[in-house]
Length: 303
Image (cartoon, rainbow, N blue to C red; front, side, top):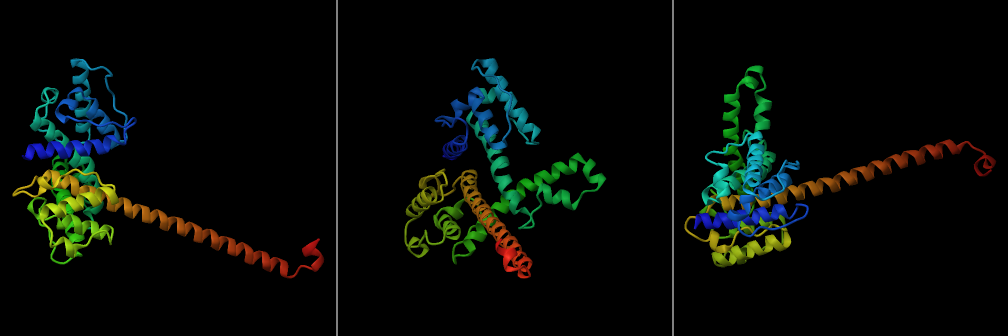
């Protein structure tokens, strides 16, 4: 059940990223499509904005080379790839493939988003930690850097959870304490939507509905109104022990929306400031012009 849910969720997430690729495309079977290496390289290029070396063909040597290039790139980003080997990816081993994709999701999606929250919630990010401890001795300690990164990995999860709690806390009686059964009722998803886009959800009506109805409604609204890809289905969440990684991946989409919304608002405010600055400058020019012309004769003004 858990493996099946992760495969479906991760595949949908990958397709949402590959929609930004040139040209865009979709995958249907993660375990098969990943074996040639092109999928990994395309995914990493979109996420990183970098061009990665690759073999254009599809024979065994070229596939192996492409996968090696992808793993080398990930290692260059200081990602730990424990028990992830090229041969296992070429064979499409489910546990290895899912482990690799989760590592990519966590680093490029969840950590990057949570980094913007780390200082807000007093969680130690790599940036915050380096700002606190920048002594030569600290900079020379590779072991200490590794420990900071491990702490940040935990903190990224905490920051995402704290953000979710904050969104839900605005609506009484809706609480989350984890990325598992806390979401089963569907109410936390609806509460986050209501916080981000007030008026889209009636939480009082939702409290009288079933878990599946609320989950279905939340996923529908998120997809149609917030343009958040539908990574989960109600049956993935309304179970005794839902998959933590799948729920984290989906919740992070709402944080992404929140950040994009804030950036959009900041852009509008910046344009307003620019317009006000321009108007103030024009007003000063006009005032100066009026002063300069006050002592001119009628002939000088209109000659």
